[in-house]
Length: 332
Image (cartoon, rainbow, N blue to C red; front, side, top):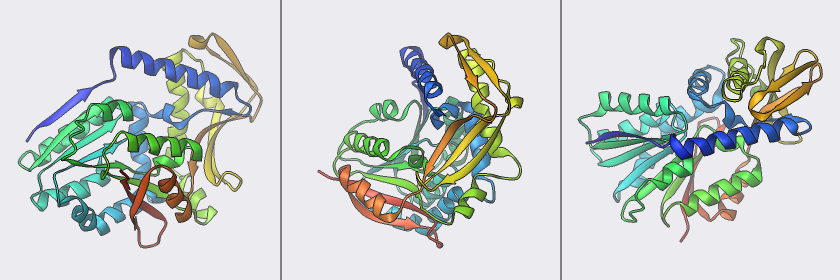
């Protein structure tokens, strides 16, 4: 079986991505209060630091999803094994959780293709190499794609005889505000065939103390992750942020139903961003919101599916019902 890699983050596509990055920073820092989208953090190093976060004992989304795959891998396999199928993963990272499912499918001698798509070229290359070293004698083919999600999906054959299941895990959808999440899943469904599946990870609403502990680890990995955003702005846009003049904290906001991480300026300061040709002033303890992780209820998940053109197939949950991977089918 083949183990291939495709990089779409070059030439015109990369220039377009760089322009989108700069525009997002400009718009975000001109907002009151300042707010930058979390996707800006995910360069190769940002993806590596986030992998560290998923391995923290108190970070429940990753631990819950590992449990979900272990508990429900046969149920997922039963959905897929009746026809030729392809597993597509958006934001695959190191693929740790998904490998639980892949190994189960391989052990059941199923023939299929796995397509991990990630914005990080390094993450995709490393994942394809790791899978090839481990599963080269299996019935699984792998095509890793370094690209934005929909650019990557556009490269995949739309053969309707192959049923796709698209994995969008890790509560990544929680980083989107509700109207944006609806737009995203609707566009995702339009990129697929009727009868294809999507499996989306949702962190459920729970005790705010549990949420606070999950996003404020004592080892400082979350702070390192969020402050890495300043390094990226320095590198990509010629900014002169000094990380030692900023701190980070995450907290649950009952108004937005989201955990929000803020980067706080510890002093009054002015930052120059050369690529934007602008200076940005910060008051002492002024914040930039750098992350937004919305917490869902089951009712909200089902409403989102219905409004976006899907039929809910099943909800797969951990034993404590802290998290759910919801499986939807694309309607005709």
